[in-house]
Length: 577
Image (cartoon, rainbow, N blue to C red; front, side, top):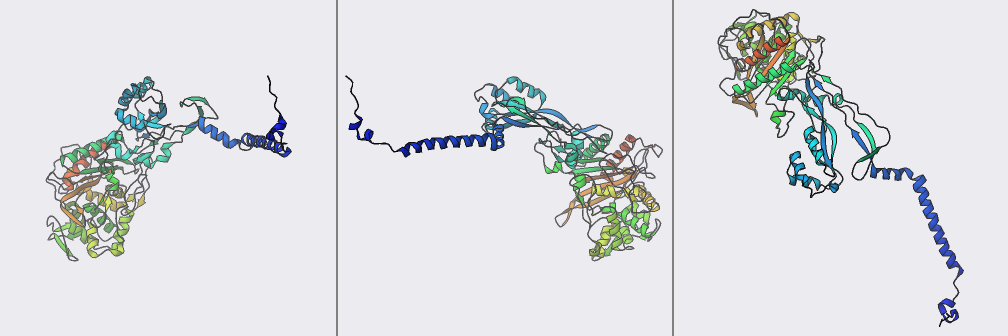
């Protein structure tokens, strides 16, 4: 039995619905459609670029194509630094199966513990983490063969340094990002680095490249750089320096070799050194390029400069007599002494015997300004104009502030400071007929012009004095070589400690040139804190000078200028300091 509904008996159904209500509902629906249409138009037309970019961020990537860093070559084309392909291992942590037994093998290949590997995979960034940068190619191949999901490789370049410790302070090193951090790698970063390229790709959620989009920009490799350094001279200098530091139980040492004609740096060696290929646990002692950064009072090395200044001013001649007896001189309340009472000496004898009293008496014939101007012209108190980071300026106070006692001590190298490199550079004025030559780390075959400081005659006169200082009766007899004439000046100084001088700590050095009549090279050697009994520069540094000079001239095919005969060295004169 069906039951009919009586609409008239229901108050709700019987009531009449207002017309505006239905129109309102229709209007709301219509407005909704208009809003959706407007939003669609905005997304598809007006705001399309923004949403396109947002979409591409989720699947499109711009991959950097690394540029190969330029090679660093020595003057003969031998490689000092080069780049080799090295794969870097990275992961998408959220895609890696942590329970995989292969992870232990992966940790072993990466040289880390399983715990350390898990810690890296627990990084906050779930889409990217470096596991290890620049692994060896055989290791990268073994990792690829494991086939672990979420583990990927990226091609990079790693620097190789064939000369190792011998050239470390010259070449320096680049970090894992292939950016120069020390030495030539830092100084010539712009030229060596090149410019990376780029590749626009689409990747899937697993990081795999699906397709290339857009044009690929190829990388521009860095330029090769050819240095003035001779790797054979560099290695030999480093080897002899290392042996001398060990023999004399010294703290450190440095050697600088300059081409006296072109101004090229042929060698710049320091010990202790480091292996640029393995830079773990490095100390500042190892990294410091002492030849350029360490400054000290040059001591007796300045006596030839004082004499040359007086010669140039016309106040003395090489045969001018200087009374140095009784081996002491009082000035300004201070007593300046020689190691012996040399009595009456010629100017040549002052240099040969390394007399402090003789040097200060010669300085009294000049004004402080004359001495200061010559020192400045030779580069003292000036930052070396060399393409190398960290070169020290040294200290040379303005001449107006010099007291008489300070002028006297500066005559024999106290009261100012300089680096070993500055000392070697200043001696090019004697080796290059009175002109100080500009120095360079880049290979150059053209003779340097230089700036005239002394006349040719006075430079030759000082060279003769340096030859006497390195000969019989001089302080540097152990600088003699077989077949080549040499000249140079030894120096020994107490090390400064605080505001005074340590009584048992010394720096010993020898600076000179060869062959003496037409010098081809200038060599400077410094040994820091020799403690095996000997500490005079003529006994500690001069033998290293001798070995480096002889080997370097042979490598440069310089003909011997002396008859080859056994060298007889009598007991050297102790130098004053």
